[in-house]
Length: 296
Image: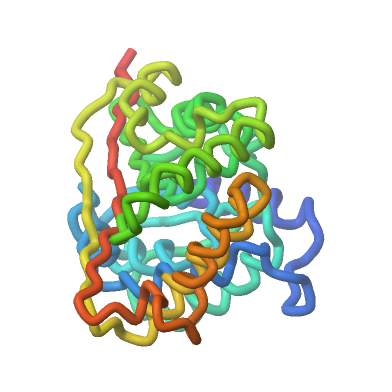
């Protein structure tokens, strides 16, 4: 059995270990915002994928692959000898990803596996590159997650992580009197809701996290996705969803006056609606970091 066939066999075994993905299973609650993010910034995200150090015959793992957005795009950069596995805990996402890559016209082989990040069904040193995008903050311990990525990548191989800081991922023209109380309220929520609140600052800490997981940190770059009025439909929907999510998070921690001010900025029917400002500017920040597994 070839190395690629071994990877495929591992993927099939892992996939069959869980329930078969069906369209009836619900998608994760964050899907609307994540898929909206992909639609709004497809051009910039494609450019990031285009810059990944991929070669035609690489073996790649897309960890927390979601609906296959990155899986199919990475596959397009691989050749007939290349192989990519998408892994995710959500069976509903795996179903969507399978449908997504069925439209893939590249030559690379693609497979999916249902797995949690702490129980990846692959031997050590399996992949040439592990890709993980916008997922670390949702996991209990980013160092443990990166450690598993490091285990399954070969010596000399790369782990590539695209992340942001939850508290500072979106820059908007908030009123000065509101922005600091808003961020303080978010931080208070995260401190109360998580035993590891530092994971919400994961973007800026990626080199340290890669090192703590035993990888050699390489370059880290910040990617700013800029938009200004008038916003397109995809950007409008994404930012409105973001504003409503932030409002729900901070509402218990703001006084009545600040909460009213925030409500006016978030309400599309309000004259103060933030997204209706004629000269609105916004920036969505992302951090891309690479770590290399040291050769023995």
